[in-house]
Length: 320
Image (cartoon, rainbow, N blue to C red; front, side):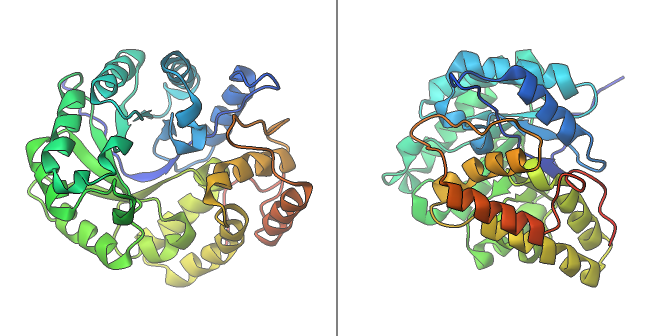
């Protein structure tokens, strides 16, 4: 029997990574968090070692251990997507090989920051980076599409060239932040001879993004809102606009809680939310991230209440 490679689509939460008071990975808390996410009926995979997991602060061995724990805990039920986050293309190949051997079903490839200073004018840099990964694994790839003004976003022509040259690219996680460009990504990538799925990560305007025709969403907010994301996704798939709007009315309050300035704290806020919801005992983050103020934590709690995200409703099936 030929096992078909994983096709990234649907609702994919990107998990958080709990730390203990000494800022070591808190494996028991991480396992509980993974089980919580896996319990949400309707998600299609779980992502580890992404922004939500503070991958910027993890060394190679910690990334490997986080993936091992995830595969052990939920790999028998759900595909596990592993982030490839590094400025070094050679190291990206090493991470990709490790993730493949550890049991990942797919890789989420971050653009290297080293491309930010004009790399958009040198598409061969992006090609070389992806090639270093694709030569180390046959796993399907999701390219993380950053905003163009960050210097790390792939111009549309480069994106199409990458998809043509590397058939392993099966999706993009679109964070371009530009509605018109987002729609172009959807139309052109879905229209390829071998379609490449566009997964939204526009969590601050998710309803507007998904109705354009995305084939799923991959978001750190799913670490808390996976059940609402599933309900929204299903409403859009079945063209139930009023239902989608009602779900979005709840999500709106969480957007205000998580995606306010400074955005560097968005996943910090999500950890605090899980403490308020009784799903984490503590919300330790690694520096340079810092503990939120008491006032901001209280604000998060107020917005969760407005969204009806409570200890009793978090991760439970949404009925509207």
